[in-house]
Length: 388
Ligand SMILES: Cc1ncc(COP(=O)(O)O)c(C=O)c1O
Image (cartoon, rainbow, N blue to C red; front, side):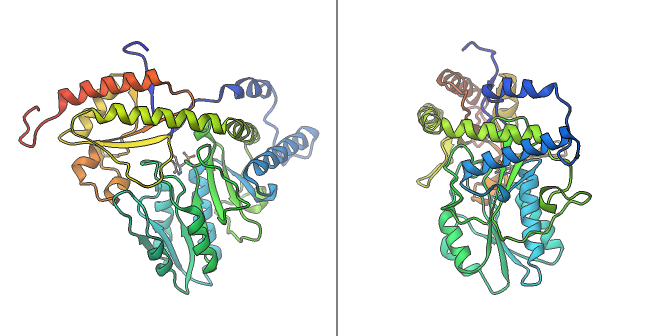
């Protein structure tokens, strides 16, 4: 690995196309994008391909093909599930539960529900972002209809106890939606044994081109659609389906399932190495405690470092990581996940989300840590603003 080469450590945002998909996709690119709703033979062939993709994805997730809905990605799957489940049950009650460390596509769906007269309870989290299952159980009241909590946090890698949450929700007759976008490929998702009512997934996190997602919706669950103008996807998601995207999703999920054991070893050994290397950088705080974490995401913060300067310097060094901050009006806001976990703003602002992919190498981690160490050395200031 030479100095100046690009280092991509932002795989949780979007990863490389799986190499196995290249030839498969190329084969399809010469064909017309036939509409699966068209009744001519090419349309019917597209519908059959879509069905096959649905069937293959369902096999991998241990669910029924009819429980798979195609969307444009994780955001749309979360939006559809949360709005659709809450609205379809609004006669029964208007109380819904989530927590503040969720992805924006979940939080903003809840904000929308709040504007429409729903009451939202936000569960507290501890310093690692863990929820308290007793608080969850106590928050449920007679008018509660929906709980939405993610599987793997996209900024910290923290794993929520999804089976226990599903059990609590099920016992109280409350629907449970789970954002599984960062779990796919990192946690076995066998939906015959885990009682989620709906689950959002996204293709480009596992190596498909962007623009395809899946919403698993358990049989018998009523959902109100939020898009109009077509009867596709069981009348729940209007619009021409992305057949090639759906096929890519099916291929990719099959490949990652085949490589599961091998890839877990790969991520585990890389993240251990990364942590050892990072610990030698002065003023670092690794935002990872004793809880369970996925081994593809690591979050860390730096004391006495200006987050914006850090990010610019990393970018100049051709290193792509995420700062977890929302950029608004040209200034960086600290990550809502880290602030919800109680990190002070200055520390939350000087934070990095490092995320690994199947292609990440030990040499890349070493090169990244060398560069990061040098950058921190040159920008770290003591509390009086003097360079340390
Ligand atoms: C946890 C989580 N949920 C939802 C999304 C949104 O997925 P998409 O980019 O497919 O809309 C992301 C994307 O980063 C994510 O990490």
